[in-house]
Each structure stands twice: as structure tokens, then as C-alpha cells.
Length: 244
Image (tube, rainbow, N blue to C red; front, side):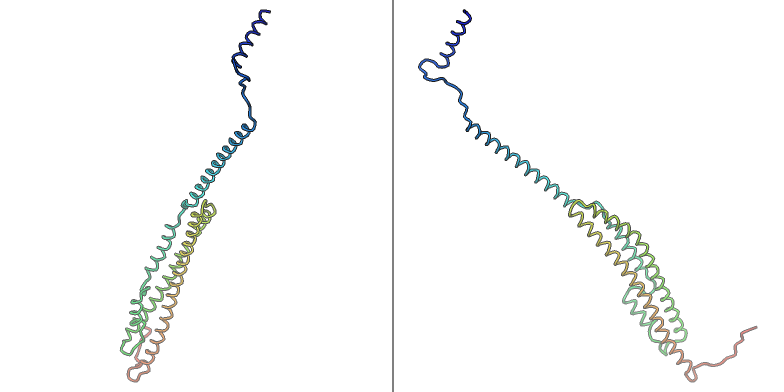
């Protein structure tokens, strides 16, 4: 009973502390469900805004990565090999023998060696001009064949470069790399066109020299025939010992 009395007394003291003198109601903690729901909704909206910002930052980061890929340089360049191929062809054309690709030299040759045979030229001069024209024609044919051989030698280099460029284009990570690979493929085509132009020029030069030689030979033949048929200056029979 003493324990019961003490518990009752303690309870009365607690109630007196809670209520206090002169208070009509107890001071209790009140739970407001509407306020709680509003707070939860506010927190959810704040969390959604944070998530949206995270997604926006991720998109911006991905955009920067894509821009970096688009601005990345192509790691392969065929410029040196193409320049070397073109340089070999140019050097070969510059080594053209005798009548080369020079307008002044051509004009000088057609005013002397390929000029119409005149009566003022000696027979020895006519023979010398004919030999020079034959040598020019042979040199032109040789230069044409050398140019063709050089262009054929460039085909293997072109094949290697084309394969590397196509592989680089297919593996391009951005627009700049794809564009650079395409530009180098166009440069390769330009180099091949330059080789083709060189072959056509060398072959045309050889044909023109041969045609000029034939035309000059026909004109010289007419002059020599005229001299042969000229009275007093034509053919004079002489005694010739052929066999001992």
C-alpha cells in the first residue's frame, strides 16, 4: 500500500506540474496532418528541383563531350605521302630531255631544227637537223615511259593511303574528324588526277615530237628531191669501187 500511495502522490505532483495552478487545460503537443502534408510536398518539390538540376548538368556535360568529339583532330594525315608522290612526278617532268615543257625552248626549236628546209641550208645541215629531230622523238618517248612508270609506282602508295583514310573515316568520333578524312580523300583524288595529267602531257609530248619529226622529214625530202632534180647541181654519176 505504501508503494501505491507513493505512486499516487507522484502522479498528483506530475499533474500539478503539467497543469499548474490556474490553467484550465493541459499543454499537449498537437499533430497537424495538413501542415505535415504541406511540408512533405514542399520537400518533394525541392528534391525534384535538385534532380532536375542534376539531369541538366548531366546533359550539359554530355553536350560538352560531344562538342569535344566534334572538335577532335583526325590522328592520321596522308599529306606528306601525297606531297612526296606529287614531287616525284614534278621532278620527272622537270627532267624532260631536249625539248622540255618550255614555250621559249619550243619556239626556238621550231624556228631552227623543225623549220622548213630552205635552199640556203647545206646538205650536212639538213642531215644534222634530221638526226636531232630523231633524237628528240626518242627522248620524248623515253620521258613518256618514265612518267608512266612513276605513276604506276605511285599506285601502291595511293592504295595504302586510301585504305588508311577510309578506315579513319569510318572510325571518326566527330564531325571534324570525318570532314578531315573526307578532305584527305579529295586530296588523294587530286594527286591521282595530277599523275594522270602528267601521263597525258608526257604522252602528248612524245606524239607531238614524232608528228613534228615526220612533218619536217617530209619537207626536207621535198627539198632534197628538188636539189636532186636541179640541172647542173643534181646527181653526178661517179665510179665507185664496192668490192676488193
